[in-house]
Length: 194
Image (cartoon, rainbow, N blue to C red):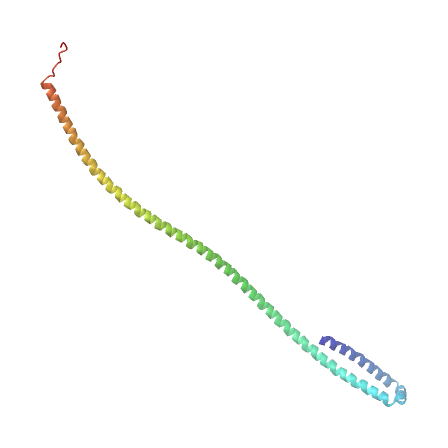
């Protein structure tokens, strides 16, 4: 808004300056015309000329001030552009850092999930080992019981074998005794006629 107003003031100033200088050129080129103007209007023309010069000087100073303000604005614009470029570079760097941090976070989450799965698998493996140990201990007890039962069975088999051998001897002895008795006295033949 200030730049637009300053530009308008500059254009008006330039127009007035051109008009004033044009009038001065005419009066300098035609001394008679100037004399006739002064004789015709006199003081009022001189007053108007002084007023126009004062306005011209005022516009010149406004124009110089506007030029300085425009130069300052250009300098500020260059500084703001530089700051903007620096901020954009920092923003890009921060965005890159954020993207890197996000990828690291995702990797950490994935590793955490993998770690949780690994921990669950290890726990299951530990539980399996504990169960296997319990089964092994139970199997050892069962094997020891089987060994004891086998020993007992061997003892019983030995006892039964001894008892069988003893019975076999008795049967053999009884059989021999029967054979001896039957050989010593023939059996009586029954009388069929009776």
